Amino acid sequence: QVQLVESGGGSVQAGGSLRLSCEASEYTWRSYCMAWFRQAPGKEREGVAGIDSDGRVRYADSVKGRFTISKDNAKNTLYLQMTSLKPEDTAMYYCAADLFPGPVPCGLESREYTMDYWGNGTLVTISS
Image 1: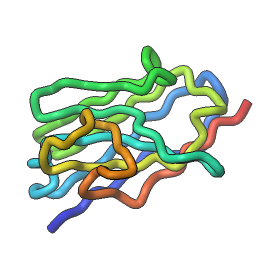
Image 2: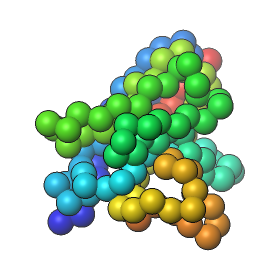
Image 3: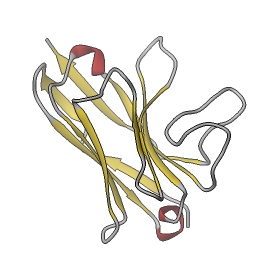
């Protein structure tokens, strides 16, 4: 069974912290790439952070130094630790998985290529 379930979203004030979790099925956990994306109203979806099966990570410039992506293999769970949150971080955050390497780095997508599996999202709202 293919499954990705996000949790940990909520509403916090600017400067606060949140940790998002994504629990994956055994099948999905075998993916080459696990990543977090986000989409705010009126904006395109963007890749936030990605980690591949070799442990290589990528972050969007807007979150470098503030967000940390990690994996717990014992729990089949992907995490996104978010600190120093800003109002512009407000968005629906999605967990995604890509089974095999593609033409773009892990954690990114294009109009011609995207991730294989997606969760339903968890909402993050940051107030000023």
